[in-house]
Length: 66
Image (cartoon, rainbow, N blue to C red; front, top):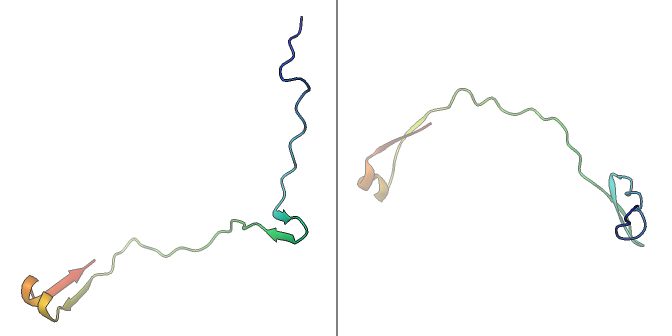
């Protein structure tokens, strides 16, 4: 004995497309992935300098950022 669940079998799923179709207005292409070069961040750049203004008076006169 078979038991039917929710009536008829499911319909086929829609095929994937690479654009959005807007009714009566045309289509818009979706973005796509592409490989890009990224900067090499193995070696940090150390910047040293002299502070100016009231902050320098409160926290010291030199700074260093890595």
